[in-house]
Image (cartoon, rainbow, N blue to C red; front, side, top):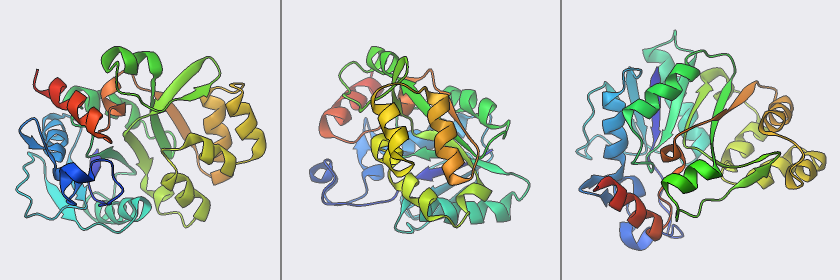
Length: 253
């Protein structure tokens, strides 16, 4: 499979802006190397990854990867980056229908985790595979990480940052799809976009993950599947200074 590393974006409102000095969060040193390098190291050792595309960083960043790697400039939005990367991958591997997307800010991810999920994603049965991590798994591995959880029937989960999508779905010209991607960190706003009935059922915890996915995908005109990921690392993105400290200590063990 091919992998897209989402590594761009600068914001003065980023909680880590004082640490980054206005530079990319993905290149912020953590435990001795740029944050994104940890992700590239995991992709390098993965048995499932063939090609890597890094969005938002140029090839002068002194990063390394054992797999063929392509650096592309930031397109200004998440969906723009995914679309640009998909077009490039279509030129390189036109036979591949799906690609993995991975955020540059989950440096504790490992090659084994990538391979575990790639084995599921390679089935290519649906347009979108979206990984979530159960609260109990997150808090057992990273007890003070203070993730944002969504309550569904019989569960509480947070979103993961190692997912899979069909290039056809990403390139689909659909405003709703693009808006849902922008709101990926806010499940309640996503639910509100697909109808007040879904929002109420979600808030009350009366629908499960599969029902949430079915409602979202039906509205978007695509197929999708929620994947419960048994690894907290895919949900441990570094968004705030205290999370940086947690992850750095973990990497240095």
